[in-house]
Image 1 (spheres, rainbow, N blue to C red):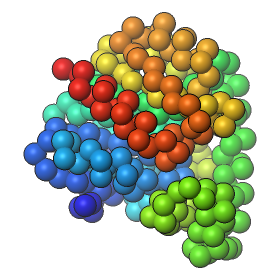
Image 2 (image 1 turned 30 degrees about the horizontal axis):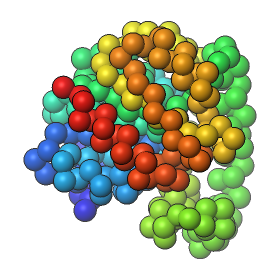
Image 3 (image 1 turned 45 degrees about the horizontal axis):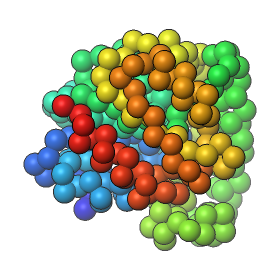
Image 4 (image 1 turned 90 degrees about the vertical axis):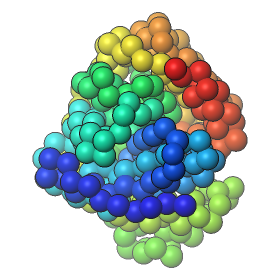
Length: 269
């Protein structure tokens, strides 16, 4: 299904996967410590109507890992440059977790790029940007420790650990998640700084947005209260809550996720 390619954007070599076809472009940004291939099930389901394109973010997958800033602003600029380099005309842009925040950064700093956006469980907390950065710092420290531990296990050991933690995932999902974890370079964990004021940024967005939320009791980040605030900040935003889904919404409840996404895409002009 996937075509594997590289493109250079401002000196950064970005790896991406693409389904191709004559449909309009749909660009999908993955979460932290994942890679573009994490969107395989979603891409397979949408490839008949969309040209799905999934890049690896800097420091992830097969994309370069330069030193320097790894903020959402930088990642959003990378994504905007990637879209321009491929000559994509006003694509729909989606993102999960870190990728969702990346997409929001792109929407505000490059307002004419996207036709619409899908944000899957972004890092939207009802606290100050400084408190959110502290949460990110703690999460990155934990992810870095996990990466070091998994590196010692190797691919087979990492795959087995993931299988025990996610018994409902397919073998393909498990293999890709394990591979992606082992591909992340250390610079990502050590240089990510961003006082990200998502409420102020959402207030600047004018294109249609679908905010997909899960179940906070299962580890999803966006609460119902945060979803209500997001809607007030951005009148063009719709919220779709998917019960019994963790932070990994499109893996836990892919059918429900796809119904919401297809419904949203059918309404996008």
